[in-house]
Length: 186
Image (cartoon, rainbow, N blue to C red; front, side, top):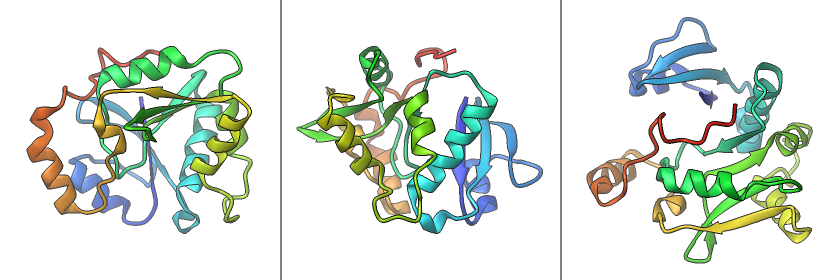
């Protein structure tokens, strides 16, 4: 299950993805994945406000013990990365982040309890940044970084030219995770 939180221009995103949806939110299939589309009414408050939307939906609609958080401007890394993060998640750990070249990347695996905690933050506060929140958890030993060999965890593709360059070079990477190889948290 993929939960996709969008702000403005939802219709343009869906068109670019080749997905159709009746209404402003709901479940659909897109690219072979089950997709739950949510609308963030205040995207100007930043990524944590979108994470709060997803967290609230996950809390009310599923019993997943953890969820991967992947910003829309970053590609999905290899299945190996997803498995490494899932294996590192344990009791007392609220967040697991991939590390490449001594730098943290995405996706971040968040425990259900921590995701619930993040949904209570004031998203209008300048302190409402996931990286800052995770650093606080690392300082007390509740968040981990896991070394990985997939450099995609560091990519940040902010425009169509960046995405086009990425897709042209994608053959040098292991294929991204498929529904049959991703960790199952049910």
